[in-house]
Image (cartoon, rainbow over all chains, first blue to last red; front, side, top):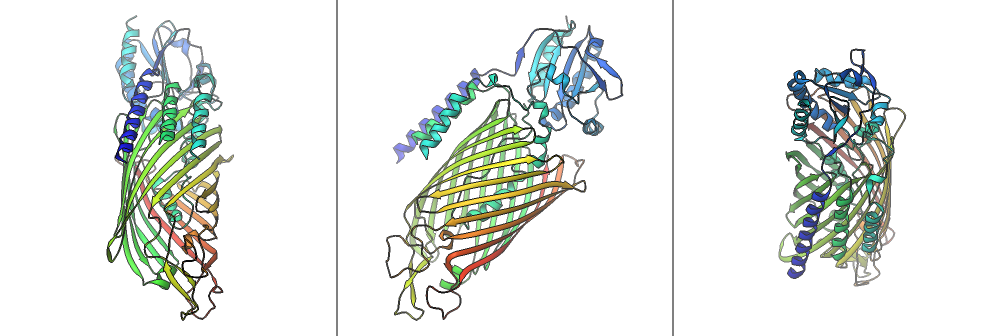
Length: 172
Length: 75
Length: 379
């Protein structure tokens, strides 16, 4: 019986090693892409209309979020910090809320206020244009309007990557 | 029985290669209803564990209940 | 074991092929529950405490402490012994590790009472696929129990258990979620109850029957397959249903069917209603009354192995007590759940009244009231 147990333990060890190797092989969270960022115009919280065009010449980070998404809520205060830090250097952050009813977003923002523009995309037009494939998704666009970095999801630590990439782009 | 599980696992591996080829028909930003707790299979694990125990201690059947999946599908 | 190896390797291979997008760990929460079962002469109550916390970037741990305080004057007890009290304590710990869209889980559980110690451990993998529309999970569990007998220091036996589980869940539409589970469990060892007896026709005895110790096979393999669905209605409410088929090498076949409805009401309240039906056919070696002593190699008179049906009506009410959070708590709920269960036996007889000809006593049935009160916080 103990020989059998040793064999089993050995097999479990092989499985774990295989898993760790395999997951190292799998791609990371950031995929660098190229191409012009699709243009869009959306309504803001204040009732105005903002377009991506308005921010040509600045580095723009577009964050697709929803109140029902835990990692999105977790990320919000960190995005606010990033906005405050880099705004003066020619950087802006656009929070695109993808929910059907803006009231949920308003309620959340009353509890967790942010100073960067929040845009509503209730019909998910812009989400489709950007091929949003995870919640949250973050797209970083350079001063010329090209998509430079794409992040799928949010895990603690991503905000450091965001800052490295923003620093790189504001220097251009 | 073990054969069935092994076969299912193999089918899963073979059939599910290249996941990025299959476009999800429920987009991540359309998961709002599934992220609502009323759509969780198991909203209160401490309560459902107790209920399962009440039945398992009094019935001949055991196992096969409970499910993962659903939810916001974030990250 | 080689099949398990194959299955777990297959699932591990899935992690290589999967998208890099991740899944999420279960939420941090703590629950304090009081449970109470009252039925068939048995009263069992006690607490269940659960705490779950993310302790590192990708690791979540959970611990549960559970107690059953038992006062039993059940039909088995009153006809063959005297009422007793017992306490069973169960503790379990578990950890989940998240890597991209895979969650690896492991856990250990120990349950202790004066005449039974149960231990079990498991290892599982859960994988999100297809943009997290599909989730596949597999786990392997191992159990090892020590059986003893109160009042008999000489008696000692053990049980070894292996369980294999496969689960697939699929999001079909924005409003519809389905799941399927397959679970096989094999036991080996002392699988019966050292206090329980069977009865056989004995014309020489006063009552017309006598007792002898039950004898069970020392192995059992069972399989359960279940299908479940959850559908969100056009207004904020959900219906769910579940069906499970079970059978095993003891000849027991069972069907379980459940339907339920969940709806938030009056703002911060949530109501759950459900109905569950269960039916099983008896084990091959079960009989309420054997024809003579040592009638078969294996003999059982445990009502749990008889032909019976049960119906459950359940209602749950939950109130959101911290809608805006409080200090480091994000959310808090106060909940109560009540189940009324009716057990109806088709070939287990109620022997509490004397005077009937053996084999013509009324069939047994009883109902139970099961209540849970619990307080949950998320942080």
